[in-house]
Figure 1 (cartoon, rainbow, N blue to C red):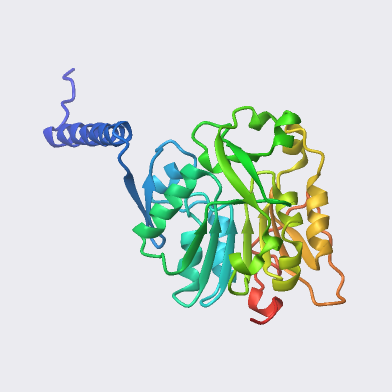
Figure 2 (cartoon, rainbow, N blue to C red):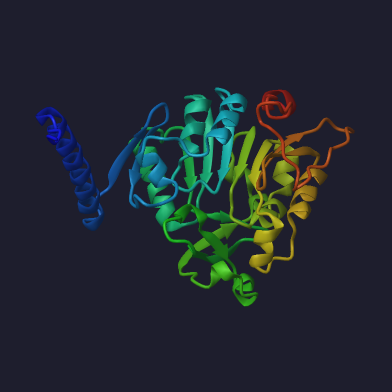
Length: 311
């Protein structure tokens, strides 16, 4: 029986595909070894420098895909032109740049990022997208008191998961603080809120890798005054126990709700959405173990303009 012969066109196509993949791998290696920036473009969002193609977030951007699509859909529902947004834990600007597009030329974004390497990418990406007139950047972390700190990136290829490590954290032997090296600074928002936020803030995103309770403790006065909608990632109790942390997720939820908010789990187990309630109204507790669907949640579809105070 005669063997089937592969068509020359098919063979050429297969060989061509293999060569393209090989050349792409070589190109990535060439850029990384020479510390050159790859540039990724995400449709509808913008361009991003890529300095670690294996990074959990940068690898997604390199494929032209958005990061955390459910959160993106929520942001697009709630953030409107002319608003002001604060981004606590901005990383490389993956959300700050979207915020800037949503608020438009009359809006403002205030982005805080304490990790020097991430902050460098943040400012590079803002410049790359021509959004310097909308985004104000601060190379600081946030806490209940102003102090210096060390930064630790415990997981390889996860720069966005960098944690702040105070002297107390290191003494308490937090696992992720064992490799703390980079120096940074933490500030307390309530010490000078209007310095950080010249405009009233409508929406606040918090992703601070276990520092949630400390950030809230240092910003209670400002939050009570501006009453922004709060979208926050809160480490669950299992993660907190591994890090020898005594504050539970439910404690963080209770603290925010005590400021006059109604909370719910947006995406289990870590992401929560808090809306300010009218004076005198009773807040409904957000259970750290509950789960809510963003597509059916009444809170998720509410407009912050309708629930926050006027400018």
